[in-house]
Image 1 (cartoon, helix red, strand yellow):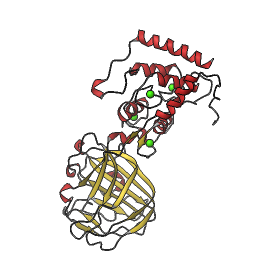
Image 2 (cartoon, helix red, strand yellow):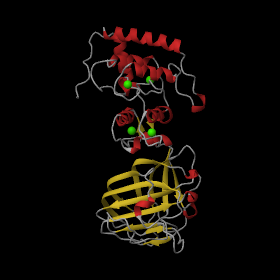
Image 3 (tube, protein in one colour):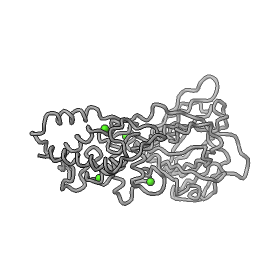
Image 4 (cartoon, rainbow, N blue to C red):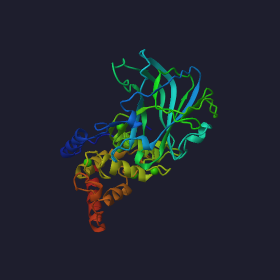
Length: 380
Ligand SMILES: [Ca+2]
Ligand SMILES: [Ca+2]
Ligand SMILES: [Ca+2]
Ligand SMILES: [Ca+2]
């Protein structure tokens, strides 16, 4: 299973060896986090102290809350990815806080509803629900400033980003599952909305579904929005690279793939998702094996040098060794995919408004012949 790579052929011409070395050196990545932005919800309480939410739970707890699309300030259309949020300790929390929450799960979804209903599960939309964090997390808070509200330092950084844009008009619903309970600091929340509405609710029975404590206040939160391409960072290392696209390709071939690989949000993980990663998130062409942002002869030399073209090893190929349609093989269908996309020797991918026409079939046939000849030369 692990030894699928072929041995290096010592008779490969020096020029190809150099190209292979160059491939390794110039492989690029896309950094995702450089232009994150943060926004406070509700925005009119960004610099104003709210009420006090005094809750302590040392029993198992399951809790749900809501934030409203209308309460978000303007967020650029290019930033549709929430990478985390932070809560603000209340000004009355005069002690520094430090604690570890063990084995917690946070889930996000969206809703068209104006408030919550007391059956917890009915608030989470099965079409949009996504686990954004699972595991243990340490929290600590900073000393209070002399004036004004405290910093947003009660941070919930996501492992899996959540695609959301307030201009779509849907509200956010979040859920926390904590089998060991937790002991938060006093949190700053927004003003009372009055009786009869529910903006947070929970139960001390983690498997239970009926609310024991509905609350008509919502927490003040600071959200972090990253560029949308952050959705394609599957290993969470803040860069897009071959690890991410290979993870997506593997998901394509998995019977029950994780929902985070559904980049088009259509309920399926398929070639459309691969295309979105390549075209929109990484911003390159199908065929760009070394992910340097261009599809050119360097990529073809590299993939034929790797020697996976129509080899007899099953499911042994990756993006860098010529599998550009996600079936784990490098064969003619990958070349068809890449050349029909039409990026060969066009340089870096332009903006989506300026996508060139696919290559004509005659020119395409000529290129394929050239590739076949080169493949034969390299393998001889
Ligand atoms: Ca990554
Ligand atoms: Ca999809
Ligand atoms: Ca390339
Ligand atoms: Ca393939």
